[in-house]
Image 1 (cartoon, one colour):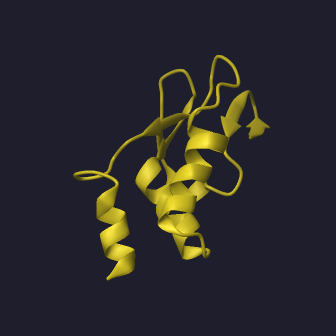
Image 2: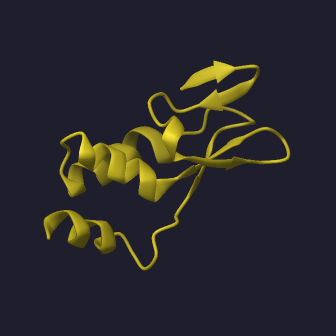
Length: 84
């Protein structure tokens, strides 16, 4: 995580930012984060596991980033797209 003016960012995922809260917390798209890891060579399962273990379930204080589950139906949607 990167701290800038008391706002916490996830390093390397600026393109997954979809907004901020009224309190200055950054909001990320889980779907875009997983897609980014897949594009860099991770498998679908590895991308999900990495995000769940290292990013999504972390709490680093009052203004921890927020991660929105914006998959249209479920996580299998991305797997189908990248395995087609």
